[in-house]
Length: 499
Image (cartoon, rainbow, N blue to C red; front, side, top):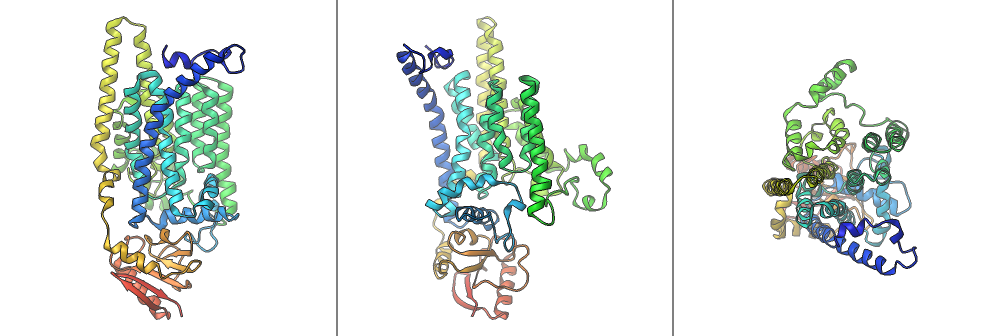
């Protein structure tokens, strides 16, 4: 008896039915066996992501923007307060920046383990667990080899790799929600797809449009009433979050409304009508956008494009490509992580539909379909391996090397007492946010007058943002002029204290 046939048993085989004890136990055993392989893939990915993230933090490669900001928010939640981040400004409530109340779910874990590693390990788990529904569906429909290939290719995909290396972000919660929701779409489980999608509106304000896209897909392929209700909810949620909730928390209004131009200069000078008319051109130029589209299609050998599920990428690609912020356009940072589960579900959907169509044919048709499936999976695996060195997960072996500069920095940081107020260089910030009140050296809205008890700078190996080595030296000169005095210096790491 196959696993799929067991899993598809009728309702009367449920534990509540009398005389079904042996069949229930067989169903449970088959379900456990079916979960073993996807769980193993999740465990492998989680281990890789967690080790990578923890080692990067140990080597002080994480930053205040953004790990420090999110840790301050979670720390505030854990203390029973609004998510305030002094790195964004004095008393700055992050709910006025992005609507991400879902990060409050990390507060209980942070109370147990008050460390930035709580956020990094949680993110590693969230990215990894998204592989579970993908692998489970692929295993049930296409076999174990396909499940392993799809799961590991997703895990090594450039969108996930780029997000893992770039600190922590709220979109980590969206990735598994999308994976479970979009797999449910592929399996035509319309209610499950909608229920998994609805919490996306608590992750980030733009994801309501993705909920709407999922709702429209349900209305098109399945339940019209359910789908249209989900679409209306998603659009309404995003609009309310952007222009009511965020605007009420942030007195200056929603901070990301100037997006209708890919040219920052045109965004300031062109009329709204001109910007709207040029939107089609903005979606495919300049070059970084084309590269992103090519990379997105290439990770499955362009196979995902054959599934209508791939259309669910459009809301995210749309707001990114019409933005005047060039950081949104390319393949680095965390912005493409939410696209990876959609693309790989679309890929599996193509293979499943092709295999089902072949089952109606003769033996030759079925063998040809199997060869085509193996070729498609082989291409996807090959692309994943070819792209892997282009993105940060490839750096994992090098993260085991000790760094004398980091050792010196830890010695200097040891002079700072718990509870102190500190202004620190970007890479030092997340080393302090769990036990100090931290602002960033040279960060926006810092002003020209320092007020923290301590200033921690790195004149030898700064992050390069927002200050260069020269900028950090100038900041120290300014602090000395204001009366700060040097407490200790090691290998270019300088600690000042206010008298």
